[in-house]
Length: 231
Length: 224
Image (cartoon, rainbow over all chains, first blue to last red; front, side):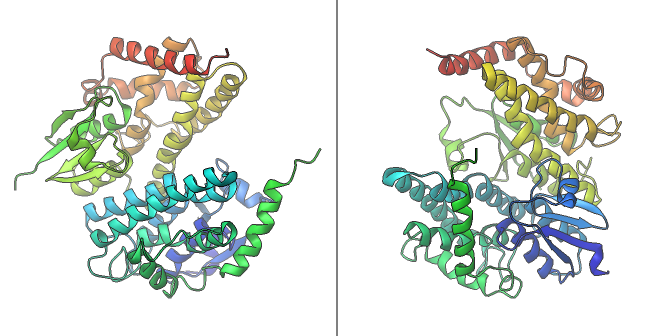
């Protein structure tokens, strides 16, 4: 299949885009990575994702697929010769999907909340506690999913690893910017060990941004976000 | 092999209703456990400690949570009367619109029903935009699943059930205006389908329930 048959609209800092890239890497799919300019949305993006106008968008044979977790499932279902991303057993799949939905609907918004919303010590403490509670739930879930392997997916990284792992760089950036510890070896030893394995996985290491580079990007973004509105 | 299937639900909540429909369409026998969300059972809290919500599907003692996740589980476990398309792109499209319903459409309709003044006006505009997408997605088919009811019909199914109830309670005209003819036709076809019809919560009870709910929300928000 030629590279131009598979395009990914995205950006290097986005954890959601990273999900799609990891999935494509797992399946050894060649693709054209079309990076959006920060603060601008290309015509192709607006045309391919008119509802949300967001990255990532996977364009396969000119057909757009939107929403990162839907993209990951699509990749798993199309490229069947590569290793499976979702577990094979329906119950295990349901568990993986449940936690991925929890991460997107509840957990990551609370991570974002630390940096963007929380003003003052009390609010920030609450936001940090929310994130910590979520991580503890995932720490508990780990031994129920991993079947003795290093990953939620078992011996190899899978859907839930991708769903959570894509946020690791942002988690480190949030820790540095707010002087808090979120991933704590004392509280979540399984997750800390898992994080190391995840980041060094072949499908992940080239697409996980370096913390310092992401930190620089985050500072620029936050300055823009907090800047007074132009008149 | 004896299959034990139980469903925790309430008499009216739209999310568990999706599961009732799916189980009936596939002809799966199950036991209903009716919950009162003001007084949740210890079993519910045990099986869904994270969200403490319905629906919970219990299959041979193992809990499955979140209505869209449950639908996929049912689809993968019981292969008769397939609900999702086979083609990965069509499957991805169905999943996308189901998420759109839960993240955008449903909240926008709830906002239009419970907010007031300018916020309500803005919510109504949003509802119209969202309904336009849904109308387009029907692509002139009888159902979102094509000839027969499928996953996306079940995801949108609450519209056929509750939109007219909300319109009656609030006086708003969301689809009654006739602006969305394909969607209105779908709502009729969906509610007339035998499996769907027999599970419909009683309308008069729904009116009372939503009237009370909306009054509570608008009273809280009312300017002093």
